[in-house]
Length: 165
Image (tube, rainbow, N blue to C red):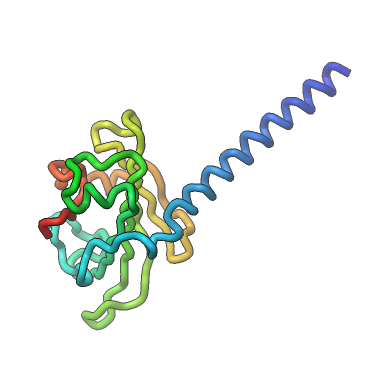
């Protein structure tokens, strides 16, 4: 009887942990799925390589980008509060394919989520998420390619946009 009870408790714990993990992923997606209600930081579509470091990322100089920031990060993006961005800030970039030199179809999203101190202190505690147009995650976490480029913006908390642009 004790073995059966132990097995039931053990299985329940595993299922509970799995459900918590699934809920965390859904909650994270919910955190940025309404990004169209956020502040769009660029007045005109961004194209070209404003950083000088894009290389093949985001179609480099050929890509088209629109940038949004949530309410938590907005004051920092607009210079109303100093860097660093507060934990909970989310910056979302729509990436578009170039079509004959013009803005083509939406290609996916790159998302930066500011985490609590200690997540990745050497790189500003940013988590990177790359998704398709349906927000299906292709990469998430401390993505080396993202970190490599964003290190060039370390003076702006690893970002490239501020109110002076």
